[in-house]
Figure 1 (cartoon, rainbow, N blue to C red):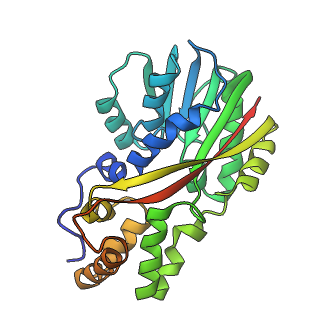
Figure 2 (cartoon, rainbow, N blue to C red):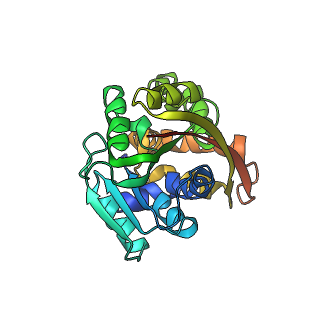
Length: 267
């Protein structure tokens, strides 16, 4: 049996420990660059488990936040975590948003554009722009997979050392849009003005090696899919390779750097 018995049960629970918890640290920093008035209307495209929605509620005093995501499971998770009457959700695709035009003071997305097919990325930004009011802000952030996602980079470095074929699934090369110049070009292609980008640096702090390792067994994302497809002995071999590199004392805390890249423009 290749599937590890510790695999988590739901999509939201699988997403949170590997990615969601770090997005929750980036989201408030991302909002520092968003110029939207208090009591504004916000649209979160690809809202996932609600990291960005919660940050908006915490720091922006919105009148309304609408979260759109193609996954009803993620929306169900977000609903359980966020009890606020200002928030509502819609199941929908970023490339064809189920919202009216010219409605929102800020249209934002976190960790969404890079996972869309390349042909769909311009459509998503055009849809975000359509939903924003004139003078509203459109903004997004993604991980800097190529140079700034340390926890995922170390996984793939170790995996490729043991199995060169793993390079075909390496997230550092599969998301070419995750670069500042490409993000800026994408936003300008939607006729957004005053397009700018920034880097957001955080530290991913782990209590111990298991806090780093266990999320990869949860079933979310390319790294987890690669790992769970391996026979158990090869999973253990990869685990020991990473433990030796990252945590000679597996009970000791350690941290790895994470960088997100943000981009924003005005309609």
